[in-house]
Length: 363
Image (tube, rainbow, N blue to C red; front, side):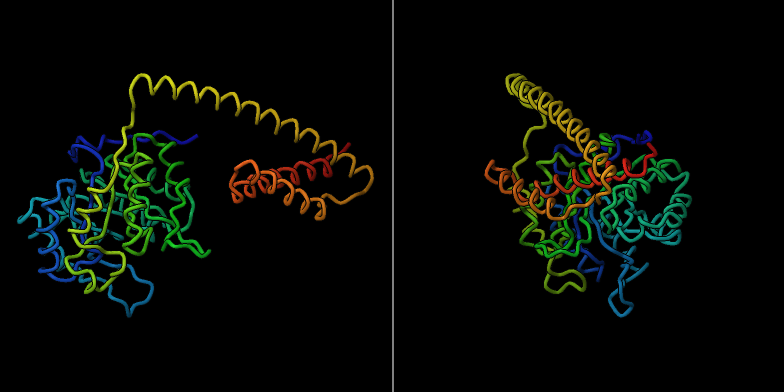
C-alpha cells in the first residue's frame, strides 16, 4: 500500500485555464539573446506558463557542453522581467538550489540522473526546507516506478507539498523509434497510486526527434496528463545540445493547435453506457481470475505427480508447443502477439514457482 502524500493542488499555485499546461524553452541556456528571443515568441502562446532552460547540464562525457552555469541565471531573471513567465531550472545539488533561489527561479526540477540517488534527494530536500517552492520530478532513466515514487515520497516527507511528476521516458536497449521508450504503463501506475499528483509529459526526451512530438503529446493528453514540457529554441539547428528534439516556438504553437483535448467526463448518457460496459468488464475479470485459480490448482496436481515420479519441472518441448499454439489462437481471435506472449510468460513463471513449491514441500 502506497503511503499518502500531501499534495498542494496545482491550480492554487500555478493558475491555468485548461489542459495542457505547457512548460517550454531551450534544452540549454546558451546566450542571453537565445533565451530572450525564444521567450518573447513563447509568451505569445497562451498555454505556455513556465519558461525552462538547463543551466547546469549533466553530461556523460566531460568534453561535452555542460551548460553556461550561474551566469545563465541572470539571463533567466531578465526573461522574467521581459515576459512575466515563471522560470524553472534543473538542480542537482545544494549549491544549485541556493543559486536558483537567489535568482528568483520559481520552480525547480529534478532530472532523471539525480532522482535515482537518495543522498542527493535528501540533500536537495533539506536545502529546500522552509522554502515554499514547487518541485517537478522526472522519472529515473531505468524503468522502475519505485525509484520514482521513492524520490517523490522523500521530498514530501521533508515538507515539500507543491510537487509535479514529469514523464520523460526510460532507457531501453531494444530498437525503437524513441530516444527513451515511453512505457506508458509506468506513469499510469504512478497516476493510479497518487491521483492528486499532477503529471506532465516531456515528449522532447521521449522522442529524441521533433517528428514524433505531436503524436506523443496527443497520447499524453488522451491519458489525462496535466500538461507538457517541450523543448523550444528560436534556432534549433544552432543548438549546442539536443538540436534534433528541439522545435521553434512557431512549431510548438502549431502542435498545440493540432491537439485534440477530450473531455474527462461525458454526458449522463455516456456515463451510463460506460458504467454498463465497465460492469461487464468486472464480471469478465472475476471469471478470468477464477479460471487462473483453477488452472494453478491443476498445476499443483501436475507438480505433485512429477514429484512422485521423479520428473523434472521444466518441459521445454511442451512449453514451446504451448507458446506456438496459444499465440496462433490469440492472433486468430484478434489479440496482439506481444500481449499474448507477455501473458503466457507471466503464467508460466507462476506455474514453475508453484511446481517448485510442491517439489520443496515435505509431504
